[in-house]
Image 1: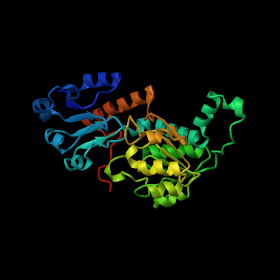
Image 2: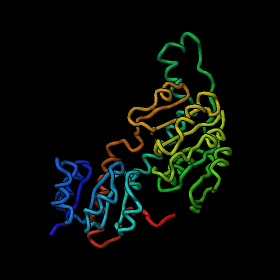
Image 3: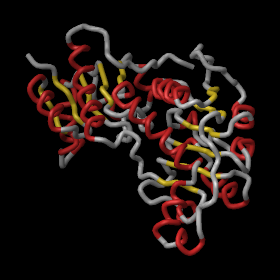
Image 4: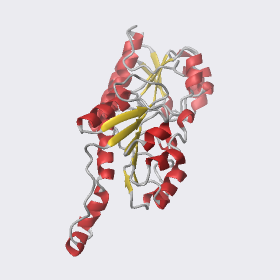
Length: 316
């Protein structure tokens, strides 16, 4: 008999076909009457498919007494009650390995664009200033800059590897020393002060809300660049706007925002900000790989094999 799996979020076509072939799927995402649907199917469900923005709380888990595993199709799981999941002994997996390289590529792309002021250079050509006013102003070299990485998980490691290949000097902050092969700085404000560029790649959620504070941003300084490929919630966005406006911070390059998909107009109006619409993992190939990992983890679990990308629910 195929295991019963509850779907809270749709996935990519190839992965969806695999799920339908190997599991008995219960599409809560398509249900008109969710309470009635859960009352009818919840008790049988041993697995769950969800994206990290979908609420998975204690009330939902109470209706899934047989649940063994949640296979999350994104790297983040901000809307999951991780404590409730851990208390019930439910395994959690995410898609970090499938998207790590793509997000690292985007992080360094944004860093280079912000550092070399590429958006303003593009406008200089488009609006005719090159012809009217002459050459664009000289910019600063990217190679050799000091890079601080906030968060040394799977994606943070990839960013560090890529940055080192591009000639950047890497140091990092994390909740604990990961013995990652790069200098560890336990004081986030000091890391910012010691960096030319600061990239945030920590998980979202209440534990990291506002982690990149006004003090951190201003420690990075008037020549510094802040890059966010984590979640909008990890930075104090009003403080970010104020620092960018008054020169306390040089520039920002952002893939994520507090109020997606409608960022604060004070932020989007600033000339010293490079903007991207949450596209860190936004390629066909990577999204397909993320979806495939959803199925791979479920298959491994129900075959009694080690999970591909488990989330450590015991970490402090």
